[in-house]
Image (cartoon, rainbow, N blue to C red):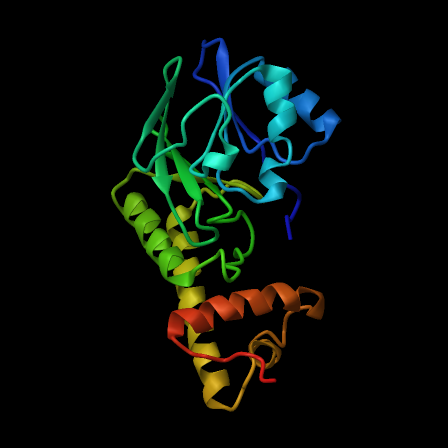
Length: 240
């Protein structure tokens, strides 16, 4: 589910003393020591969303660095206010634009490095494959709106590279976002067809639509199907 693991990003303006750490990830002491060793003085820790594979180390990295933590979710903030959409975060010349991108979770955000047109996407866009929009925290309508917004940023020349929360760096964001949008549209068509063909529960939809996916992932797929059904206004739930 996390591909090669969670990507922790260390951001620092050239020549600056202090760094920003994004998504410190799991509470693994060796990993955190490596992050701090590479970062040097940490001015701020940011989170792209609340999932544990991004946030488990929150308390420990705050303890080790003394840096405040910030996110859209107030529960992830220590020593600072929550982030807000369109906010500009500045640390020693490094400037990050906060872009709320709900869908994967309610509190998902992206961070645009204004100086180099790179975008940190958390789990909104992955470096390989597609992300899960899991009902009820995940919602497909907002997610599609978020993808459209990111696609507009690419079209405007404001984003030329994606730094995802999992997987490799994306150097062709236009192609990847177009694929993400098309993939979601295709899945919705498949879910509609499964319901029209007689699927009466989310699991039955999964068995039809995700037949080519390893069954070990069907539980996650079922949560995604529930989000798709909710978006379509279909009431397909287990019957007593």
